[in-house]
Image (tube, rainbow, N blue to C red):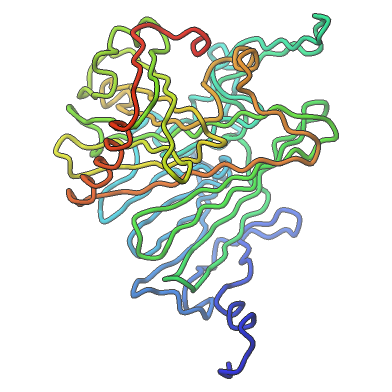
Length: 412
């Protein structure tokens, strides 16, 4: 391109157009192509070999599940378009990003019965590093009743655990490569959560990672496509096992308040942010918090290994994700040794309860809302210490209230 080419044209040449991997309407399903610097003609290598590709799993409960693999030359992530664009697992500098669920492989949504076990059948497919809970609801299963101002019942339905979005497939998935600023890979998936007489929400999810980095960002736009107002709840279930989780691992987050969800959690409130080793018959403990935002409006949560070397750090936009839940489930390794960090638009209670407390988002027709989440993996003690120190400084500058019993208005 000549040096005198317009600046706008030079900029356009730095970015690939959308490279489609899946488009249901066009009959496109591409499991043979591999998006690379060579295939795009963009110099976005940053000294690293990078690629994006899609494959389809065959056999067993995973039959028909699509997996999009992003490799930025340092960080590798596997995204599941068939399961609501959840992040199945990953790896950074040889460090695995995953947990060992009893559900070893991705399960096709067609094989999930949400009503099983009294409405917690969602757990039959639960094994992702990051999965979404929502969009119309998340949290505990139960009967959700909506009444008008006169007390008349306008809706009465049973809601299953954690909603529908994690078991809905994307109908459009595409890749965009930006060669500027060191190179950036983005994968976008579009998932519709719709039903006749049951609302019409659309998730437009983009996961972005800079080539050669140990971090990634998720930007989710939820749109109400219906002609009537819609309720929205969204929770990011971010789940970690070994090597981040072990006896003595510590959860760090600057929060204004923390409270146990129930009496079981209250029993461990004095050590709410400390983790045990694998413990047979351990019953989960859940803690609700109100995070403190930094100058950019983001909260931070971090799980650190006992030797303070490894850390998985989440930053989340508190303007739309103002609440944070810590799920400690340190049972035996064979039964799913895991800790969940869960930024959310509301607490994971039955939607009826969250509506009563004014925490359920309401979108007008054609209205949308954007949720932002960023993750960084540190395998260097110095960087881990920097992340912890930043959280500590924010907490020192503000008071923290620790409730020894479940807080009224927070717990069901």
